[in-house]
Image (cartoon, rainbow, N blue to C red; front, side, top):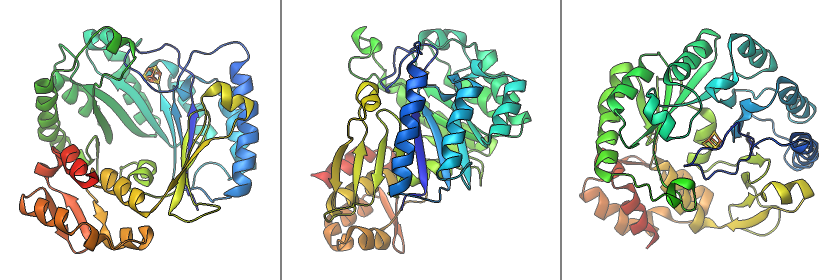
Length: 367
Ligand code: SF4
């Protein structure tokens, strides 16, 4: 049964030119319609999967762009269903311009325990290039404020932006004392304004940033526990680990994905992907893809090898119903010999050399 819930809140104050998430600006009546539909969707999901829930994650979009009353309406929906807040962690993704010290008190009172703040950079030119509305100072102050208010705080940083001084950004963010930092390379997704403008990411700049992250963040006690995620011990995101380690989760809201036990038919489970907002508001059904043993194995290796925890092959065999050690024999031998994979009992991990070649590792596996 799923013990984690993701809620997609697609509304943003402005639209960033690199973004390919399902997002939109607020419009008259749209948020009210969203809340009405969410109430129905939550009731139906709760009936099928009553929990309890360990983690609840509001992502987007910009969930903190909702008003206090709108967030309270969602809290009421969850209070009537699975219970609120999540038993271990309740996260809100937040834009630095959407809160001040007074609002943080309200968010705390509503039951959020963790804020994931989209700082992205501390440099004005980089923020302008990315189309962000806040200044470098406002981004860093948002982190300080959230820490002072007692939240578990995570900050997002984007690297490989043309003209960016990554070292300066890493130090500026780490020096706030933030206990969790997610670092993503700028990627140019098809059909985004950046793609249409022909903007490219310099692979050398990207590789340099990757190495710099590895070198600098440990100085501040921030340990990499997934390729893009770094935390002080004990401050790792519990919710995201559910995705990386192949556990079930519920997704609510437009375009949200779920991974759920299969009601009918065999296999490990099924992915359900909600339609975008128009169809979702109409109540259109999600797209359902069965996940058999082989597909599950590939998915878990793909995401689990990105983590420090690695992949427990014995557990993977039990869940996928496959003889994983036999199936992967050649692949394991080849890449262990090359020093890209390492074993500790049943647990398989990518070495630092394997981590930077993860795509190739996984492609070989799929082939
Ligand atoms: S705030 Fe986030 S979700 Fe919204 S447009 Fe920018 S990157 Fe996309």
